[in-house]
Image (cartoon, rainbow, N blue to C red; front, side, top):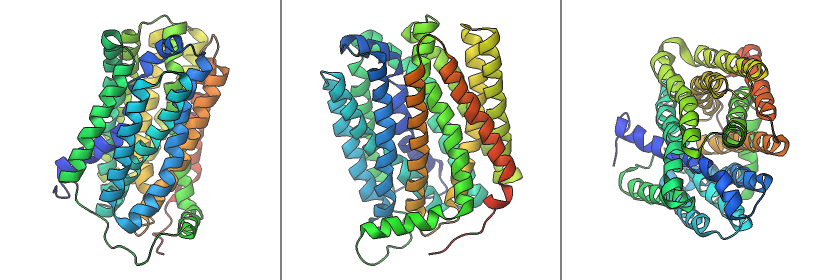
Length: 400
């Protein structure tokens, strides 16, 4: 079993958090082809993303409370097996309805990996140290949007869009083996008794009433909603409106995603010196700046790939700075309910992302403006929340 305070354990946790975004980013270049092969309009193809986000949101609700009682490893293994089974269904889906349904179940499995990886971090670390650990995981997770669209474009060109899902199945199978052999159980103590639905609602109520948790959650949800507005809309903006090929789209998407890695890398090196709050503030400023610049360049240089990608790179760098620290801050007050807090944070975060993706998908027609407006609103609101909630976010640890 891997020991705490080792890069190997952090890398394994990073792999687990990567499964979720990889399941979205890898097949993005294939979205137009999926629509053509399955005879589905753009709005229905977009639902393969929205259904995934909804499944990811609701799937997280039960994992944390169950893992707070039964341990991290067994619950995580069940989630990974569900992910693998649903991914195979995605690979053989014969119509868009089956693909949408399988994507929702795939997301339910993937959501367990994200929830429990965060819970393990809270079990082992706290404060700025937890934020640093989350940032290292964020760097690893950030490699998914850098490499996945290009890899997905290559897979699609060589073997068709179904190969993307066979590749995801292989990743999930590797994760199952690694968790079984290497991941230690980190739950400090297991409470007596069995899980009851009332325990879930009571635990969520305690967490949701904590003002510091809500403030951190607003930072997480807003920045993440902007990211998924970009993820859901960019395949159509860059390929259908700007005329890029699937591989060119993958390269453009990867260029913007370098911002996540850069922001997370910077957070790793500064959070222990300047603390969670200032690191979040730096990220919120980058989010707002990238969002405003994107709106300006869209107005002044419509159709320019460079003018579209560079502001998103800055926005995503801000997200790399903001989200890991905000997640650490959200879980910090609940050492005895880290799993439940992680579930609740993930549910709200993914619900906001699903809403943003659905809005963009509904209004996207022949212009990038629906995507740009959502990114502009979320970026500027993130900075506003950070600037007005500092005292609230410093509320003390909450014990059951």
